[in-house]
Image (cartoon, rainbow, N blue to C red; front, side, top):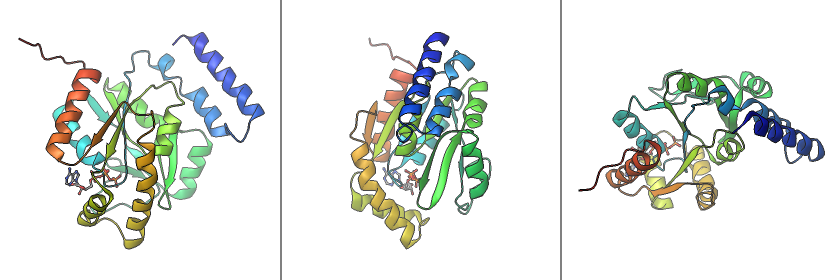
Length: 237
Ligand SMILES: Nc1ncnc2c1ncn2[C@@H]1O[C@H](COP(=O)(O)OP(=O)(O)OP(=O)(O)O)[C@@H](O)[C@H]1O
């Protein structure tokens, strides 16, 4: 995208947001201005974004991908206001931050996307993406549907993959087995899952995977990644 095109787009955002303040808020305007990644990092490859209900298996699949291609992908560490789960490390699994600091950083325009979920705020900072881009790696992100909508407004042009659970009862079973949720947070995650599954049917996604059998699902994901993102083509004989 040329600089002129970016300027035009940002100008359009400015015009529209000044006429329709409720539809394009301050955050979106700042996002449009600050996410000119194509100019900042001309060779930044398209990030790979995962979305899907809590418990659908996003982290499990991302981990496998990272283990298979450690040189190719870098996972953005998100910020969250929720408390760490046992074993979670600051800077590795999340940046744990208190609510008022997170709100200030959001107001400063430090986040590409952010969302409130289950009483907590989650978000991906510009810094987290830049850190990975500097290493020459493809950015991997795990974000919710609000985040997908926001990142789609930037110039990052991500690949979006939706992870679909086989069913709601199976989703509940997996979350119960994971033993990370209270009764209340489990109920909230399941209630949100219905809405997210509907969102998974929208044309926002380049690939939808039903995570019934983990090995099968991962194989499909790997094929999609190799053919589209890494462009590794196995020669046919
Ligand atoms: N295909 C599968 N079959 C059975 N269990 C699975 C499968 N995929 C993932 N799991 C298990 O389901 C649980 C939820 O998976 P995971 O934590 O990866 O979900 P998630 O989508 O990242 O959730 P969250 O958004 O809450 O972080 C984990 O305990 C994981 O081991």
